[in-house]
Length: 272
Length: 294
Image 1 (cartoon, rainbow over the protein chains, first blue to last red):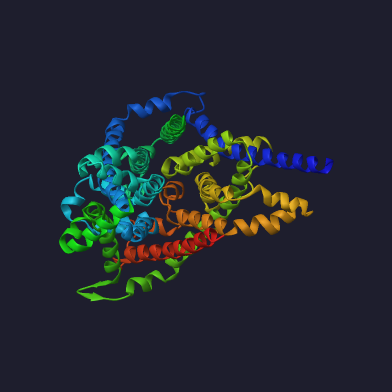
Image 2: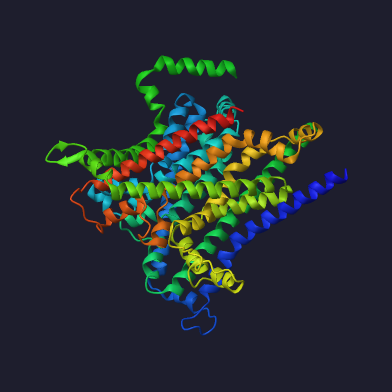
């Protein structure tokens, strides 16, 4: 007995050690980069100057706007292309499900650099000349994630039963789509949109190789002349992205908890 | 309910032809985008890589690819992917294991943080590490004050080792994310059985945990391997071009920074990358199936 507790104490000792080391590994670079971003040229103490420099750049808002536009556009394209496809595969197209699941993995197999070299040559000029071509490529690059997340999301809902019930109660097809299917898969759609938006907001490889300027590409260009500014800009965009991701994920968690709670309540009411 | 589905099925079969094609319309937008923005560019790379000009097709671009400088780029890329996926994989698996044994609140916080950190990459990550681990960086300075001079010991951020360090920042969380589901499948009874049969912790690790978790571990590592192999932005921002990775070589070819007589060398390299990545993903598929078969 004594040996056992001793063993488990050592075990929990290693546990704290390892988790502690992990924590240090992730906090140390962030903390020291923040410190670095507050330095001033010529060692004149710490300052916020590098951060105010960011907002003085005239292209800052232009590029944020472009990136936001592209993110919204790729979210919209994802909703009108991937969502109907996955929903159909779950309802009537079961036969084609395997093929499409395989296709949806393929963009993960092709490195973005390779896709970029093809995109540069394959697109007709009127597409090459529009920055909005990027949104379509972002959607394709995101397909492995968006498709998979929708696929998993829809598997957890008895979609087919719901649709059959709605149809047998006399609802039209359109009515079934708007008031049964869409509400049922809303959280899966949200997750897919979220993935498409994060990916397109951060995409650098394809964008820079096709010589377009978006926020991440602009960061690299503007950084070349100002080391401290570039660190500040990097920390600004990293911490901004992390905060957003955490907010969205906790919102999703809250939603999920609320839903499972309300389901429990409904079941309790039904049995009472 | 079953009755209804069966009547629906017969109507589909009876109508056949055009109307059954019409039924596939929900797949159309997806398929169109996929064909035009994915399959078509890939087809173009394949075609260009074989194009010798003047209507002739041949393998000269591939012959050039198999010469020393480009093969060296492939070996460097493979080395980077191998070492970084193994390092991050082992560390990530150990962290996932200890997190798995913690309270559920802590577990969900780590799951969330892993999801967030696994997404951070690109140029900002490179700059963050320059600020921390560059010659003037904060971490380097603090370590020096503690008497550890990592640059004196031969470390530099702008090298293969440096890249492995930077990649760990998103690969360890990615490992935690993809490896945790495998741990969920473990049963507490296994440990109890081991203990009651007189097995030690080491024996439990050697004869139970490692064999059971190995396929999932392998699958996760291969996923990390693929992500490291095709990563571009961080490597480019960090090393400029001092570490000659395949994606960086392709990038310089696209930008026209490297001039060769072989105009379609970039296409051949791109096909080479797709090939390596496809092999990795096939093994990933196999190990995933192996893991699920348990």
